Image (cartoon, rainbow, N blue to C red):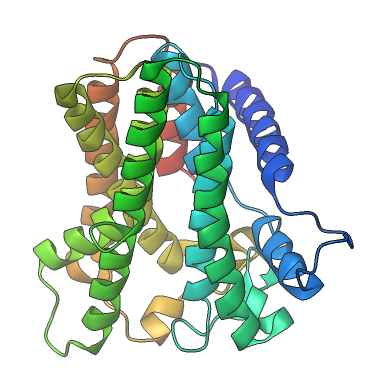
Length: 309
């Protein structure tokens, strides 16, 4: 088991490397000869560079290395993944959605640029993400490389769309209007799609680009990713009750104030904590079946269930 101090050093190093990769693929933030309006470039860059754990691209890169780092171009997908994740947050914060003015202690995109530009910045990031990911084809040299990039693109599109993150977001919005208590099945659907889908995509893309595993292995990766996704979201629900607003960068208790049903309101605080631990341990057991070194990944999963922000 990786020592805590070593893990934190490794996490800092990986986060910095990931940040550099993401910055490399962002649109130019300074004036250019192109006719693209500067405002949209500024809003896109502001949104992505506002901070964050960079969890999804880090998971992608770890899986890529574990499975052999075979196909070039993982950086394109790491950046694309964070653009898609960021666009979802930009839209989440809009007045028509969660109406949040702060995220990670900073003004949200719509609060800085206006809600119309917030919509457009999210749209732009989604489109730019696929433009970036598709550029990975430029590095392909063999048939297997083309097949891997094509497969990774399909995974990205599927999990970002109606069968993944957007489907979960729709279910979450509809749940807010539901007067009766949500069922556990509804809650799990929301968490596995709204949060879990992009984690699944990140891990599966990393594996596909790393060594193109068999379908059965992708199914194991899906189970592992969904455990991580649900545990991550339930921990978010817990932190909304017991967290520190200074650490979180946003007010605590917002779910309760808005009358939103969460896993904690459904199951209670202690049961929610036990479920986070159970899911995390199950994810680690599955992870141990994969090839390569997964000491850091195991430590990362344990870190996520104990995080305070």
